[in-house]
Image (cartoon, chains in turn cyan, red, orange):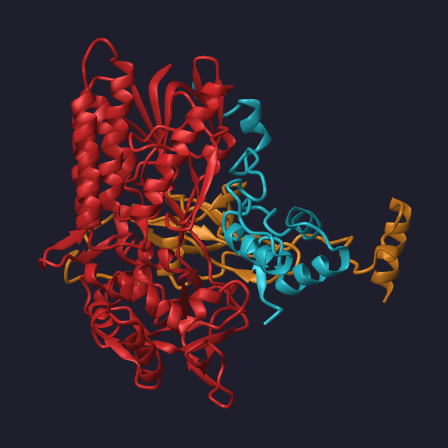
Length: 90
Length: 407
Length: 131
């Protein structure tokens, strides 16, 4: 069961997360940064709740009022030409 | 500069837009899906009175009203950031930036997964994906499939697939792992279903209600309907079977299934392979809040409402000046509640804009009453304890305002 | 075997309305869909499920959420990459390419095995090629 993929974008397995937690004895945030779980192309939309549940399981940290891993813009991948304003209509 | 930008053209966003247009505000509605309606589009179920709730027809009514009022709706555009600026908000999209005085975020919910090994194979999809394919695009997702995860949403969508002639083997549980835990626990699944059974339109949930009113009956129920399971419109629902693995090389070919104990433990020697070419995974919904987060809105964690929720009050205001929320982003409930909340948000926004010109106080109150009434009468409820969650949120909002004044 | 996955008749939603046929290509092969289809629905109606492979592992992927959240269905449309098949309506003559695996020069398991310079990397590539 540990070979189960948790984060589809970065193909991070439950085993990867458990091992990282064990090896570095780190916080949920650090596990995410080390394994890249929830940090792939989709921005964590698919696995965020799963990753949070796994983190709670391995670190024992309960969810608080703050969102566990800060949401950063852009919340959708954007091309540089869009950021530069080349596709602006207005 | 728009008076208000509404992100999300679902039931909440559209009904808010209609109210704002009725008060002649300058409105822009944005949605990344090519059709308006949000997840309302795919909904199709029979109400307790026998009438059909047809999401496509409900959407049509909303979009027709909106277009009669000349509402500007831009579809197929993705918002990737919202910034609080001095006199309002700057909404960044892949088709340029738009500015508005007020912002309503009505982005609905996303699905949380109940991951099962093999779930990245083509042919495995979320239950919501199957709903959109079946009812909106009218494409069969496969020849024969299985639903993993038994809850209100998956039961409703399984019925929709059945109506469309899609062949489903059964509904079963995911195997127990640190993520699926409660979704994989027959007693807990039964418990959750039975607490909302009195509201349910379907034979499946009524069955749950009858058998499972008392705690002891619930225990008996999970222990005794093991092998034969129960049936909803002829489709087996197995609270005592779980899928441990989805198999296939290039796409789904089969699933591996075990019988489980009342606590969800696999029973040795019961392994079975079921041939299917698609799998729907149902792990429930959570509010899609990323834009509220980047806008700087404070959050409150509420299990009853389905996860992290932007702090807001019954008038759909957040503690941030000019920022409003409505629909599933405020808690997982039915589309009818979302639509009623959208009306409140729209009127709340119009009231602010028309302060000193028109008195909308009574209309806002009326719309808020309507939300409560709709909630009480809802035939579909996703989480028990919605009322408690809502009351708590009201307190959290008041507290946030107090802190603000103190600062 | 064309478009045989359509739900033509429906007891509540009625029968599928007449729609214009639209022709497009996916990985060089021609397909037809109906007006209003997304790339994902048109391909699925033609029995195509794999839309890309994971860039590192090469494992096949198809639609997962179907509403733009998961980005698993991203394809290249008329040379623009990262386009979500589930949110993009098909147009006549659209040229769609599946997502391919990317070169993984640093896919080695041990940090010690990483090349430290480009020259070292080239040398390793050459050794690999010689094998």
